[in-house]
Image 1 (cartoon, rainbow, N blue to C red):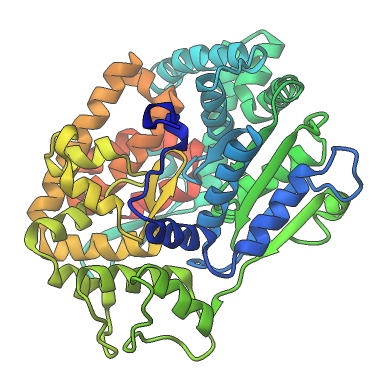
Image 2: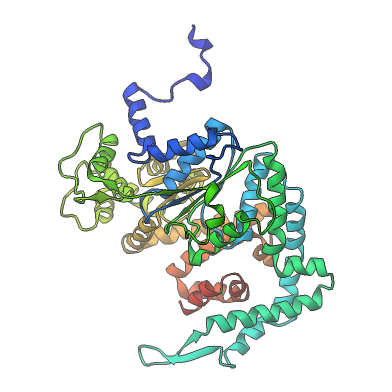
Length: 495
């Protein structure tokens, strides 16, 4: 066979067999292979096989490797079985945002949502009109001010003894806000069906979204992955339970549902689905597996000075140790803050690149290159960051574990505040360009889920960096925030 006859797909992307072995060992993620094989086995069974499972819930403490395993299972479903893989990264604000996010992924894969999409577009159109009428003409913002006078906000003397601070009665304030908007909506929308769509879009749109999934599942195997489903009180887990138990209509058998949560499933709540549901309970790695995990990324060597617990270790901690081994060459056993040690050891350019990588929730190569001021065709620092073991590949980019992100953001504000501020300015420009690309202007942005998702992330960081300057933006958004997420809005107001 001549070299020219070798297809592109058969060419090895690796330099040597040793590299192949090392990468396969890493892909196997010591201690997780049984779960991968079990998932693969279920997918090879016929739909009517009594052993076939359709719902998989992965549980385990933060840092145990849930997101990694989910990403590996999604890749398996797509590459080996040709499934259409959909991924929710856990950053959505409500079930409607989840549905829109996954519908967008289906559209990119060429799968139409002929029932859901027109209804959602109608919702957006009327929401834009109502956002203008309710907030401006009807005085909902005035209502927020009135709340400070009728006992829904408690005034307390602050800790310094000077002045007063407001402590909102969050439940009462949010409830009154929703009631006021509902009354005004009822007056502005006489059509009953349209009112139900605007008044309770999740209940209205969920059956339509599921109906389109049923149609798509007749010709394609769908694999839906949901990360961090028990976050913020578990609203996503509750919605998924409603959906999977048939409260929004028949659930297609040609779809797989994979979820990751910190807590194991409540047996009583999921009892009706026990026959079609599998639970993968992840535990920290035992010491020998932990040493092998590190050796995979350390040229097959077991370093002597790696500090491992006597019983088990979290993969997140091991990934950080592996990163330090690669960049520093050794691990001080008595180091209290390995992440600080890494940042201190790196040269200035790499240290700042790592700190800036903690700004976006979802990292893309283009976004990271812009933050670092690098051209895409020669983004060496960005590529270096994305190669680190602490950076987790995802279907739509990369991410960093929330614990590491928080620590790096704190280090960034301490060690390179000017660089972090410049990075936030760059994020602001990205957001402005995104709004232009979406064709949104002014209030239209607030009713677009894609815009809100990035805006909330950006506004949070701006407030952390310069609360005085950006508090006005938060106050302007207060009516919408109260309706979308009252707890978050009240906490933001106190900040």
